[in-house]
Length: 351
Image (cartoon, rainbow, N blue to C red; front, side, top):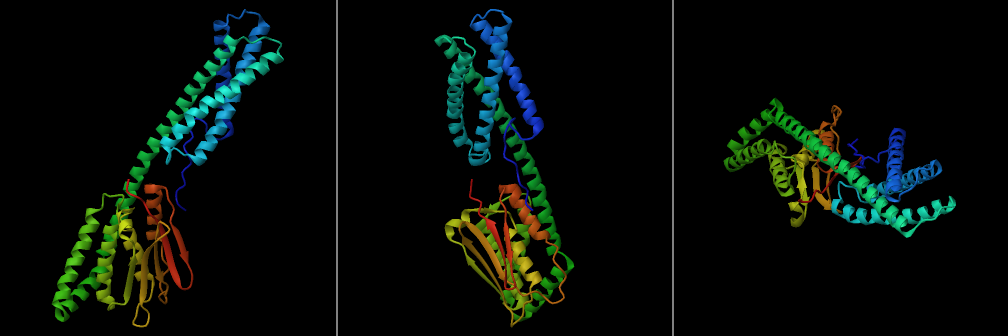
């Protein structure tokens, strides 16, 4: 399963303890606001008057709290901070003002009317202005917490992605320079030197390019798709010298899509898995297709499992899944039946 991130929500998080602590905060703010009302409006010190104003302040604070909590739930769903920062600010500030005004004025008239007290125009304006100020301060603090958490999580994700990328490159390099791969490559090269010196020279050049690429991208989280496609073509060329051109690679990627990004060696891992787990012979050619469908990269191959082959560990697919989750918080999709195996990778646009 890929990592799923909870939306950033500031202090308005979920859970009974969070709600209780938030309500206690609102009660405290209500008492502070009541004291302000007493000073500004020159309220006498009668106990009933003070209790009435404390009840009003606490009630409007809780009402605003619930309203802003609902607002945050909607914003986190449709305009999360991770992907809609500017749009969220443009929507959130007017929403705060509208909610504060729309709740404070009618609630003030209703509450004091219910208590049999008159509300002057000055008191109504003062109460509304204070509610707006408190609402802006609370939400500024809340979104400040949200932005800090987003920044912190981004730094953590970058570090995790760096570690996953380094681990991926190390495993890939270790596998490719292992005795089995090296033995096959040298045997292929020896045969080509006698049969076709020109092809042997080309083989050495592409093999060198491949290893140079693996070493050079060991610090990169994402690379251009065009470079990855060139690498895959070279990799299939190397394999085909051993399999006598029985691996057929078809690439259907438009030029404009080649500027998008992809985790390094993701395509190579999928091609390597296809070669590793399928029987390849004169009667059974391995067909691999890399195409763009609905803004997603689809890598599929004919499925012809080797007889008595050990089950796969899934390490390569899990590595690709983790790197996509860390780099773009996007999932990959895997499909398989008796005839084909398909992996769908999200397209990551250039920033």
